[in-house]
Length: 88
Image (cartoon, rainbow, N blue to C red; front, side):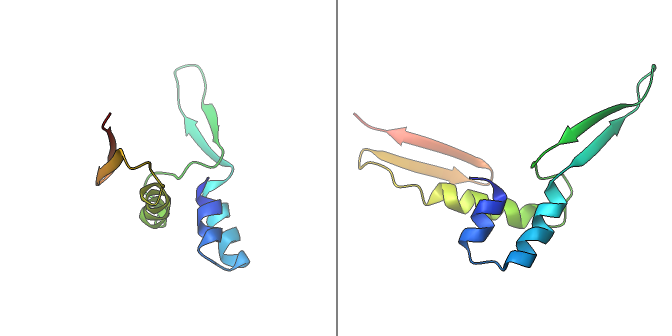
């Protein structure tokens, strides 16, 4: 899922979910080039430096860590890295 879906699963009130959505939707990056400024539309990514960024990352990562795995698989996670170890 996306950050909005994961926040909703936690029971966050609808109006707070709208505030979070407004932070990550329809962001425009303007980049100057020699010819003319270029614009890039971001749709749903969490902008670097966003005050809520770490919290949203933790919510998304928590969902990853709760993934049900078969008995022969184990997930090892540290910081922003996750590895899946599978034995045959």
